[in-house]
Image (cartoon, rainbow, N blue to C red; front, side):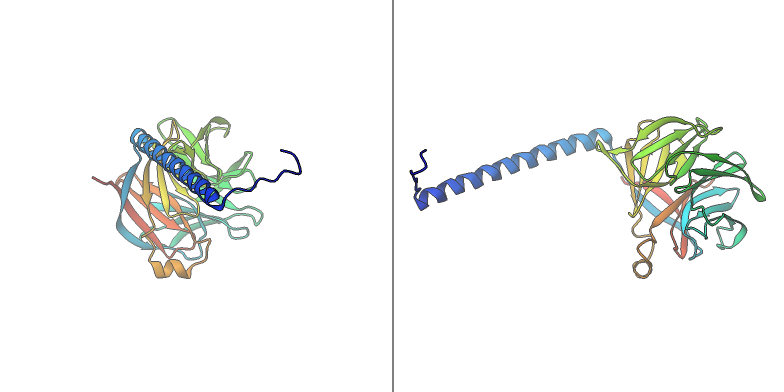
Length: 284
């Protein structure tokens, strides 16, 4: 078209074209929705993500000053790792009363994270310092440390293959050798093919790993070999609503331990007033 030529379309024609364009995008949008729906049905059917009910067995008192990062249950005692610089510690607790029976305070420059039990030793991660602290359990005494790269969040020991599984706040779990903490394998945790970020405290139970998802009320269950999520637990009803509203934004669900004899789990959160003994039950 030349620069001095002007084409003027009729207003009615413009309206017709606009309507056709809108209809085209609506049809396209609906087709995309149908395809996504079909894909999601296919993915969920193949992945079989199971919803698990959370049933409270007992409620116990919990230290409201404890910035909980990790829990371990062993021989009727609960071991808790708490964070924050200048306040981080490892302590032994009577789970029924919430009373501390042993306590080891970390140096002020260390921010404690998750813990696990390997035979008669407790292993405690640190957040950004790249140090794993190893303690004898009775009495609690620091005996050595191991260095590692990256952040430390959650840790669990798998008795079946005798390896550690470690989270770092991402969607990846690091499978580490128990002797020197070297990385054996990196596992990406996925749900419906999408990575699940912010993996926090962990517990290894048989062929599964249960993980807190940071800053949410959810716990996921995943296959430790593939990283595929196959179960989900909604823990939003644990803490009474009024108490939850009175706590700060950092007071999130965190801390998971397992009692092999009763097949129950122990759950709490950062600065929560309660510790819960619960069961995870399949929904019919």
